[in-house]
Length: 385
Image 1 (tube, rainbow, N blue to C red):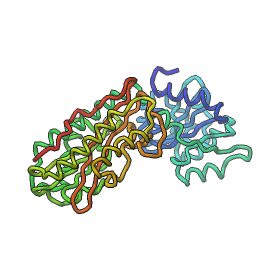
Image 2 (cartoon, one colour):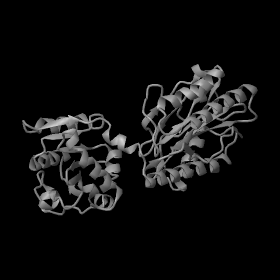
Image 3 (cartoon, helix red, strand yellow):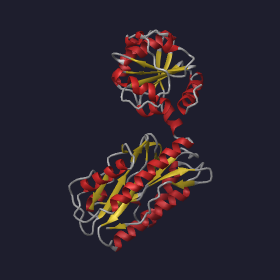
């Protein structure tokens, strides 16, 4: 087997097929494809079977797929047809082959399933398009079936390897440096949209390939909108400003929220900020292996309730992150997932008062064997600009 993490992950999946009564697993969701193969293109399907895996993609990615998947590319002329029967493609001697398909991928996937005699093929119903599913389902032989598989690869992804943790650390560091560099340029009169653009420019200059999500900058009464989009509204004296930002670097996400005050904060703002900060610190302090995601949410809400602000907390306490900005577990009241070492999560309680403003504080946190480690280095001060 190839000495790389993608081959090891595929081997784990292949070894578990029989227990799930499957002959093969078909993966088409981009983050799962990247996790299992290293491929980052926009059009591919990965077929995992005992002893071999095949990545199907189109000619645009011929060079890229061969490089990213660290496997031999199938160069047989037969691979340009809808039904490739090349031994080079289906050899069990390589754990992953790249097959370049001219035409719809689904036709070549179907031909391969038939050739290899796979009767029960798992697929990701929440991740596959209806068109792809219908095209595949309508052409299956009578004895063959598609079996729904829910969250299998996502569950594997929740526990990060040391290499993945290192990439998340780098993404977090880049994100925080971008914030620190931008903070020096923030002043009253600046537009929300300009501030968001500056943050994204800085993170790209520092090594990120893109923001992990659309950067949130909301000032004044708009800070009470948890997922506000930046507008041309200007920062004004007395405003609260929420900045929620994250970077994707080498495919892995970071997430952080920090608060600004345009001029000295009022007594009401100070009290609200203290409440959210205490709730966030309590949530972080509760993180340890074995505790449920729901329990972390309960801990933060209890602190806010002591301030009479629990009703103003309108979202969950946090979420997992990695190849996606939102991954399992969800740190909400109904998620009974038990935290495990190697999980990367966010802790982000907030309070939102319509007509006044909102406050949220968020860090990226790593669950460790003895508790947790806060990966975000940026101070949690209410920054006065």
